[in-house]
Image (cartoon, rainbow, N blue to C red):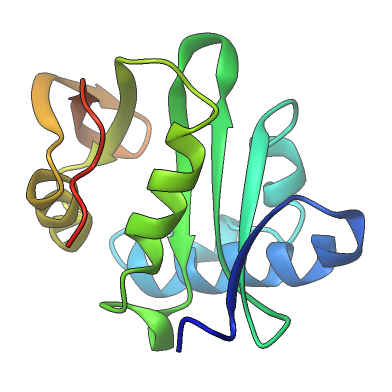
Length: 149
């Protein structure tokens, strides 16, 4: 798989595919939310001004990570469901760590138990808890490079 997998910086030609992926994954993941309120153009609004890396498999967009660089804050990490558990999320995180400083922060909804387990497994630690319009979340922090497998 890795010979067909690439991590690249955002390019305008991938914008529509990224919008589609963001909408699709949110609709299937956040089943507790009113998914009818999700919009194709949420991607544009929610990633404005962020540094974005895209995961491509055989030139097809299969995931992305977006970071608010000023605060080293990972805002979004989404992988198409068919490509879960293949190390792509970890690859995106490792690639973005080359551009950020430590500590790196992110918030993850408590209900998103798959993502919570993923972040803990790769070394993020819980720094706090909060609540927003989407529900209770965990504030995670990473202070070191992600270990290789």
